Length: 305
Image (cartoon, rainbow, N blue to C red):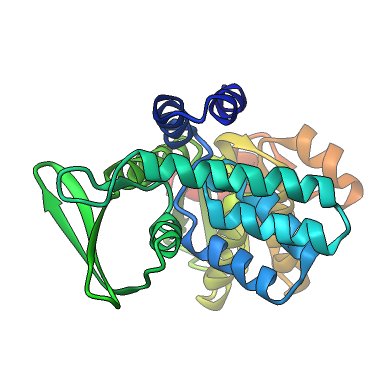
């Protein structure tokens, strides 16, 4: 969609086409504020690291689509690499986008310029031979405005409402995505009353790469606390992956190497398929697991502990 709107704007060069394109860019799911990345791009251009410029610009994607300074950096890199035709196209594109930014406002309180990235403020000022001396951000009538005083004493206003709204939306989307994919593992530790060296770990939830290291670290703390025999109950684990299963095997292997014992409950097939002969001992239920660790007679008296 944005590619078609960009082409239309470059053909028409009118403010309506530019504003439609800008709205599309700000609403794009991959758009984000890119102050640091754009600064890195500018530094690479100044140091004439042409291929780094191309790589950094590609990584920015749609976030740099309407940045005149970013496009000029790429044009400069293309010149350095001998890609003159591509450089000419980019120079025309940068000029068109700067015209679009200028046409969407005049820097006044009544009609502040609309920026897509904060670097647009510098681009617009430089187009007028101005440099920023002081910036203040204010909220005016529901809009967020950057008030910039230049070295010459002139004052220009830039509306950053759309940019900030897009950034906030992206933050919320990332937070929701993180919550949706969050890997939660719950571990309940039970120590036998008559033998505190025995611990039963009841796992539930997701046992995967995201929690594997934490699980191993938690088991190590039990060892330091005197546990030498352990039952790892996987019956309530909902999802798992190879790193999660390897973590189980690591805990069991670490216990046996210290002269202790370890038994797992459930997931015998998956453990066997992944680890082969290195798979830990697997019992079908807790009674059998305790019987292997303690002997049948003792386990019968403590299995409910």
